[in-house]
Length: 119
Image (cartoon, rainbow, N blue to C red):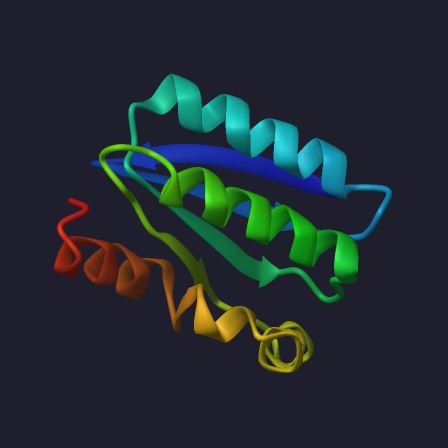
């Protein structure tokens, strides 16, 4: 598992490569949280392009980041991009689609964040 983060405008973009499970979820959570605090970003975009599998630990990571953004005074959005068919199905089954916006590409996600006042 590999995770990299970059800031574009008011967006922290986290790119995850590999499986998101109980072995990797702690590192993913910590990496995103530290990068977000340093970045000054308002929104978090997670790029799932290289994620083939995600279990309930990954759902927990996403819900935690969603709640963190929701509780901030300036708000912010959590947007997922480039979901594989397997991960997209998990979003549907778990109900994540009700709270986390999905975008086809990272650029689409950046545009969505801007539409919500994020950029």
